[in-house]
Image (cartoon, rainbow, N blue to C red):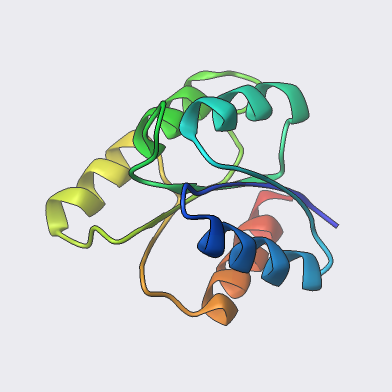
Length: 123
């Protein structure tokens, strides 16, 4: 069982992602903005983080940069979940240190598979 932090400002989508991951046996903490995501990363030391790109407080890219700049969090896998699918957006995500870039709409099964793959590689 992995500890996963989900940061998504859309409450329905946040619930969908959380329920899918919980049904896969993971412990999920979900928050609605980037500032809370960064605080929770610092406090809970998640095994994996899923971030929306555009959120109140800090953006998903800002949170990812925060994670990757912290020596204790640097190896934490990050999935960016976003509606922005332009090549420049994907490049910005990769430059920030995102491990996976998943565009909305997405398949919850695909998301769970990517989570499992990243967790397997990280351990």
